[in-house]
Length: 485
Image (tube, rainbow, N blue to C red):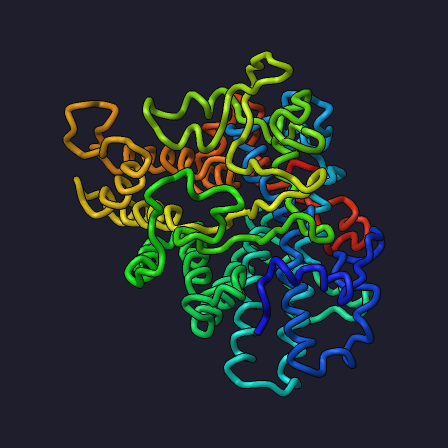
């Protein structure tokens, strides 16, 4: 079996030499695939190829940086107060990014490189001799990872090329134009359903980081919620809840930090390991205020790239135990107290600059509970009904009083479906703060423009621009999103 994902990711450098040149269509085809069709002969070859697909999630264009830039920085939760943090990031933050912004291009390229890796596993495995159960599981993992990457793409760009076969030559990519988002979602759902049948409920400690049935089910529930398929979302999420595999940890703060990763509340995390040939995570340094020296990071440069806004700081209710675990408002430098917001969830002692142990949590149980409550409410508001139960379990863990439909305290009263929607929006904002969800939640609920227009958002900003490099490579086939021409 595949060993702990943290220990195996450097194998991607041996398997794939990926082109960084802009003239490779979609950046789909590696320049070298180690003799391509002749390489994948044994189960070990397939395991290495699958590990490479997990490794793709660490790329700068996926969870190393892009997904939190889009998920948090694009929202009202974080911002770039210092332009030295990066002009490309500040453009995304201020809704000034265009088709030449590197966030679009790196996100696009990295996801398609990861999809290529998943497609290799799926395409090559039928001809490799191994146990049927192992073969089915590897395919399930590859399909889960492919679904996750397409889910990120379709939510970010809308219609995107749907590539389900291995691209052996860059010229093959010219056949792929943008596919309707609905068809992309159909493939995501199909991949997740198939993965959910063959993936294990839990994995051994030596396999931590590999996809499970719970990961496929949770992501499928989120896809249904995104598609406003409330009944399917509720059924899927409730099935996961009823299996009893996951639970809320008693202490919210114990979700974060290298000592707490892959807990009973965690469903899927991108694995990072410091001091291990470039497998460390950058978040401790990325999220520390510029000018803080090593007061926040302990080692390395503070980059100021994801700074909590005063609006998110004010959004916490008095007594909410999640605030101090999620963000801090001061640090001490040379004996002086400096007032500056910064994210606390990913603090750790780096082994070197941009080299920490902190994983990125993609899916966790509190997210599932709040999604289930949301789906129930959309199916029909029920005063003090089941949806309240799941909302309040999350609130109570944070040290907050329950909300009810007939509460005498107006701040704790939810008397209608519309009010419950706003309560879920608020709870998700706080519970999942700085975990890359806020932007996608606002888009999913059609609330983005109402909330973010004061920050400069316009209607066409619901999607990011297609990278200009992709349009230039295949003009007339790959087209631009409205508003960015």
